[in-house]
Length: 365
Image (tube, rainbow, N blue to C red):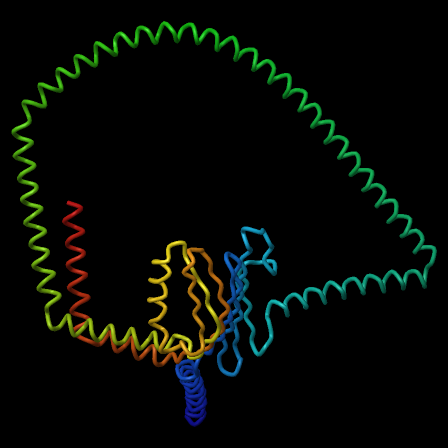
């Protein structure tokens, strides 16, 4: 009995340790911020951007880079890939470690083979010379076999090309004969077809006119009925949507959701940004509209980001920006829960789901 209780106590301690580790990891994930830094520069269609995301004192870090070549000058992008992603754990890249291990294994195999050959050379020079001669003979045999295969392949290609040319000539001759016969037959066929088509069209026009005049009153009545039904449906939808949009629960849900979205964006956007942006469009009015949209961010970044609009009617875009920020996952989770538990938001989403699903079903029918 005592041994059994001791085993249970050990299992309990292990479970408590595991639970403690899980709770610690959860707290770290929620309360240790994810930090990011990014730099971006571009001129015209040439863009270069680099971003670094780190967590827990660089325990985990993610480097992302983007390169786009200038399509006008066809300058190659730096690096082998337009987008490259690099994950590091404690500053170590697992891919680099894997490549180094593979290179080390290959180097050790070569060194081992080299030592074996050197040992044979020292202990049995005659056998070493025999091995060298055999290796040379195998190499020469492989080269001769490769040359023979190339010659045979070339001969096969030449024979195939000659056969293809001969077959193409025969095909062209038969095609010319068939084309002449077809043209003669087709001419007669077109004449007869034109005559019958003219007669058929006149007859069909007469029949269609009679049918159209006979069914015109019924079609008009059906069209009026469908228009009335559509108008009634549209009026009903307008009334339902007006009632929904003026419902205090909906207005409260919209205000709550908009506030949470603003708080989430304020939390996710960079806390520090600096640099310069110059832009212009062929239409000065478009340049002014973009400047008005960008000016909304002036209270937050205006002192550190210089905006240079160009109203000369020339399309251009140049930028050089650097930014940094941090994200607390517990705050994002708090906002999500805040939205989910709000009864007014749940009511609004339930109504929209029912209304949009019902309107789609009615459209399908």
